[in-house]
Image 1: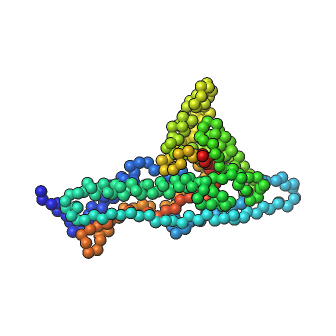
Image 2: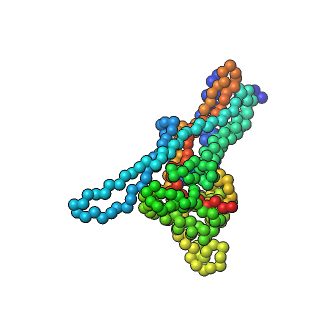
Image 3: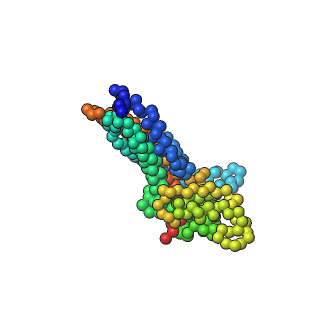
Length: 300
């Protein structure tokens, strides 16, 4: 069989079709991170988010009396430092001539799949390291901790549980989360609308949220309050602990993903050779600017 006719600029003539193969590899499974994190663009190497102390509750002021001024202090600056990720593999002109296009397509699909896995892994690690080893929050604690001191109040916050996911523990953690305070001691009315669990807890979570009558796993003929709660369930395979679970108030949580350079597929001819390098590249950072609006349970 005659060899295929290959144009002189063969690496680049194939680029449009191969780019589509690359993005197909990325999109073969839905990505979860964008359902949890606010995805933002960035035009600089580091993004910084300010953490400010809370102001106290308003007081009654008689007519003609000077207003009591409060002061808002900067507690900390949370830095999002972008990291570059890339991967490549080489393709020879002989491979194109010998019509190994299927093998090349498979390699590019795997390249796209690897990009998706890296994004999901980095985002999920914000929760995998929520109890230890993660970035410190403005108050110095981990993303999920208890007895959290407030700047302008003697009260404390708690967003770390220890009970396994169940009907009772879910109710208990929602109640605790409802009582979260800002640094001025004012209730922020946290109302979790998202339950995030690993694959191993998927069936338990679906049973808790979807059962229409009776407390799940019981014979009681009562109404399941979670069925009407309207809570979104996210089952995230990239959560590494089979027992830990999380609640999020998506309106209050300051979970951010900065997309500095969106993932891109590129082709470069290797100088002095009949080979080309097929590669993907991206730059991003991901994290949390505050713990409020989030509650996690570490189960041992």
